Image (tube, rainbow, N blue to C red; front, side, top):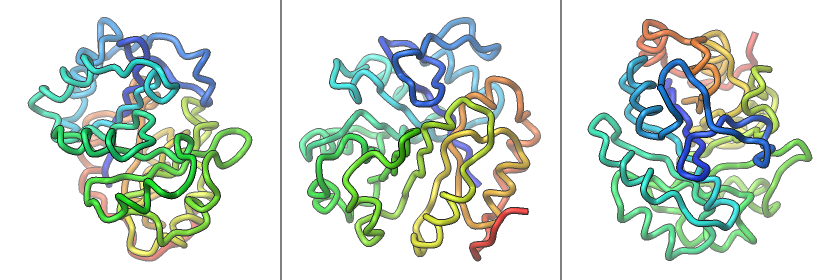
Length: 243
């Protein structure tokens, strides 16, 4: 069961995400770091657990602004980080290919940034590609074909419930189970609202392979011992509802 810490970047700083309302995001305050510098926050998270992968949401790039190139470069240079899962609002093949060529990046295609299914069809078979199915408070955001045709999904798929991000209200179990039931043998990653070890174990019961997390880690809901144990938790092969 892979736990992947999230760093939401805005104006070169890590911000606290809540509910997908990006205009309200402010620099994070966390006991794990003296400031909101991305490398400092990542280093603080590494005092909890040697996380090999981080998920990066470059909010400036997603909203059409200047990408956070310097923080990304510094994060890439951190020796403990083997992968950066990067959502930078990718909407064309050139930018995705450039990201793939810069290890250790795995580009994330967020459905909210797509106009149609053309880019995903072009890059579908690339082993490092990740698709994020993005759900806001008003529902799915993106071309309907990307949600309705699982045959277009790459091997790794994030179910991003932005309305639950930072809420501490628990994952969207029903949506995750429904998508997992259509995903075949694909790797499904949960994002949004995950509170604690119990949530993660329930996700594993019906085959979810990993979880994107931020708030619960900074609030101390998972300690180093729990994170070490979850590293060895095997997701169920069969899709079954949580208790």
